[in-house]
Length: 374
Image 1 (tube, rainbow, N blue to C red):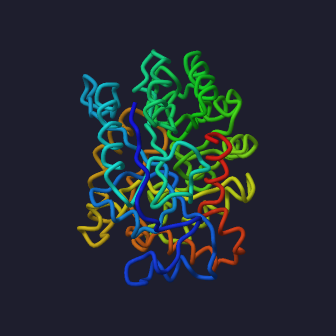
Image 2 (cartoon, one colour):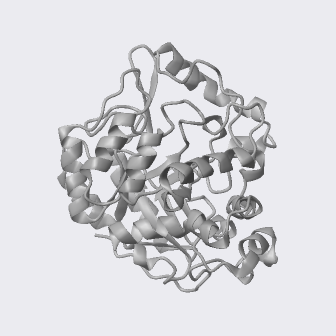
Image 3 (spheres, rainbow, N blue to C red):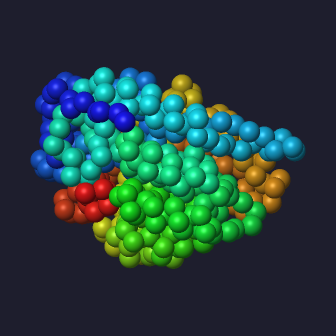
């Protein structure tokens, strides 16, 4: 078992203050506007190579995917991305070692730890139960090591549940129901992002604790199976969970040029369907943004080309939602470390109250993490 070390200096307590960020810059000014003493929480991101980026991003806490993906190909060459036990057991060890040796971030095991130590509270996640296989004892094993969030599936069907990116949709399996019961017993947060519509509904019904859709978008706005339906939003909200709206712009809008308003449209839709306490912010890109797009100065027309091979392979398989090539990857104004500050300002400018913004920017994530993890 790992023994995470406590951190040596404090950067954030509950919220973000201007003096905690470099030079009192744009991130600091924006996040300290109105002196809002609320947490800033990312519902899905990754450990950056430079851990100081976490401080620069102004995060109080994050759900941090530490799983590693292996690309495998079907006999016809179709790419699939899987997370097996050995690779991810090693990946979890490596992530905890990095965290233990940093004063920017600490390994959090309980939601109540948010804001109580120096740095950003990291709640570690695997983005798929492929790592569990058919051995439910592995859930407790990983929980003991420090894992706190477990996603049922990533795009494709597995032993636990049906994935969103399949020509035919299926839901939760018997093993998946048993796995959710084990997560409930241990106090581990079930995540239904990337799940099929039936998986989302059935998991919310099966779980005795809140479930989350850590990162995604609304299907009522972009009709794609990777996006969550209104019924899914209602099911998660009814359970006390959170829907995290992410940065992948081709699932935020079909317009030629993505804007911050497109992100706000999804936030607004979740609120309309599930209530103000049902929505949060997620990333799903590296901390500083999608790196290839940054190198291209956010030239979406060029950057989207790296996604077209996979997109067209899904189209060839008859998966719904892939009929038209995407036009972009990122909202340029959000593809940087100032993302959370920019979103917060946009919400305030759109007329949301301080209390509402506090919930969207992190309060809702904090609530569900405390509810499930203690």
